[in-house]
Image (cartoon, rainbow, N blue to C red; front, side, top):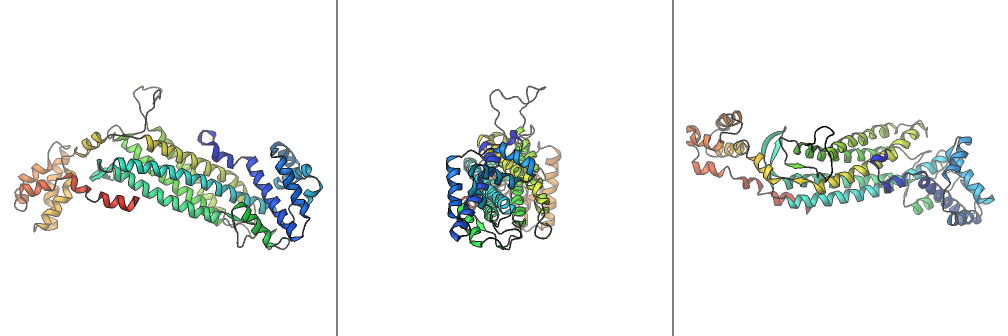
Length: 436
């Protein structure tokens, strides 16, 4: 985790103290149920909770010192608790294995992270929706292959982003559901030394579901899907970021990131206003996506378990969640403060002498009895003159002067095909599909 790209609330989920708190809750809840079953004295869980409720501070340094000797993190934690609670602590961890604690804790952390990420997405969606409605009918040029195609509106660009992040939200809800499982099933998942009701009790206490078959670990296909989902969200972040970066190019300048008072764009060139935030988001998206592959490679563990996944997850768990949380927050800020220039959009839209209306003329000629091949030839030969003039010529005027075109369409019919508003007649339909 890089502090530069981290926010406190998400980072707190992955702090050592937070992890140890979850460990304690798992052990205490399990001991509580074992007491109800008569496997251990009820006083054991009572002693654990009594100590915990009066001593809320986790001594991370003390646990680390014990681990330096034991070379085992869970044993170090259990030893630290026993040193503080006393004799009753010997009943902790009855019939459990370390993975019961570690995997269930990771499930809690990922579920809590997902909850924060869902909040992030809701804020982003709200910002995108506001800008979409603001520019619902702001004309701009649609581009394919980076080349002027046909008119769209800036609101439609935003609506497209809204629909995409809405899908991402649904994916994350499903990924959270899939990852939030509890395993308290013992050394190889057979419940030989612990009753399945203990697992259900811990799951209920932590807001998780039970894992149907857990071997010694929760199956890693669940984690692979979770991190793949984060990668898809990151790709959507990059997609919108790249759009902003292109729109901010000097030759385009239809929109740009907010440039705050006192901000500097370059150490050498005082005139620079660079899209640094969206460039940063493009880089962060690459990092988040990179965590999906090792998560998928973690699926194929040996037999009931090995620990080849463990070191990987110590990296990707906090890093992917913390970085995505930061990226979503940054993108929301970019969208919320984005400077939009409708006049420049219209100027660019009109730059190529009406070429953006070529398809309407093509269709009109076919409807007037001209073959599609001839219609395409007629429109293209005039369009290429406009293209090569860099838009100084007018497609409409060239078509009006073309004898073959004039034979099929009147000047009035041609002029009607250059009506900009025609392209926006279904904007309401699209918005109703996206926003309801």
